[in-house]
Length: 350
Image (cartoon, rainbow, N blue to C red; front, side, top):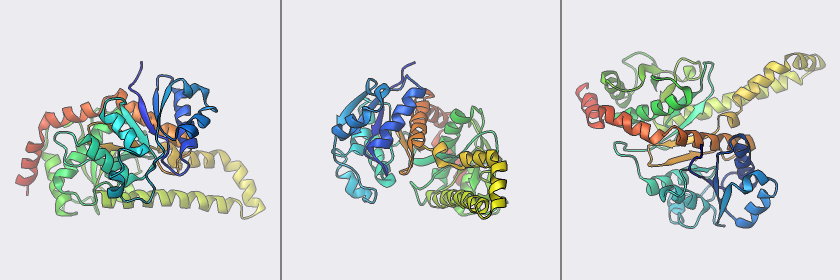
């Protein structure tokens, strides 16, 4: 089965062309149906392709030597949307030349450009950044929003829940993913007005392909008790960074402990299979690929520091969302109930 081409912003991320091209090549080796539009400096891309002949025949190069800087303000990047590798990759999705775009560049600029070029889907007020996080359960956890919207009302949170559930159904195969709102407690009386109103609307809703189970606290996100965690971008980004920092802390702590003495080093050799499994499970490259949900097109954000494996995973996320028709699923879910009915139920429950 062939898929629409995937546009790769080859200039984005900490290492740019080398890792973006090698990541696309690894994805291509795993799934030979992938085809690409590589956007960036043609000379550097061709040099990188010399090491990946499997990718060369499946790719076209769109030359561009203008790059969005990692610390560039989104407003400044928007003015150069027609000349930068990031902007041209997004535009390829807008024109239909590609089905999805992957970038490891500036997150704020990527969101701003994507929203301006692709617009939000009918029934969605704001797009949200969603990502997969490891858990002790049988599947990863979908969490959104992770920084695109620092302030959200109840209507936004309800829409995020619908989009997150549609994404979760694709990655978990569950017909009704367990959805919870991030809160400071699980009691019904806890939380801000927006969180409370969103919970009332979701409890009252019928026809949604999800199982709304109330609230979840931050320390339970990865316990395997929830499939979709919904929150505003401010809280979500803080929770994400705290979880990633804790994972690095644990791995560094174990490394220091196992190298502190000869006895510890022997203990490390004995327990190495378990520690390697832990390292693999916590490695963000193995869960790489944030998605801007709610746009008229598929845009995937890779970690700026992602390695080849991480970029390949981000490409695989983009391909799977194309394959499983994510935007069409979200549209169907919104139509099943209607955003106006959700707003009415949320307001009448106050």
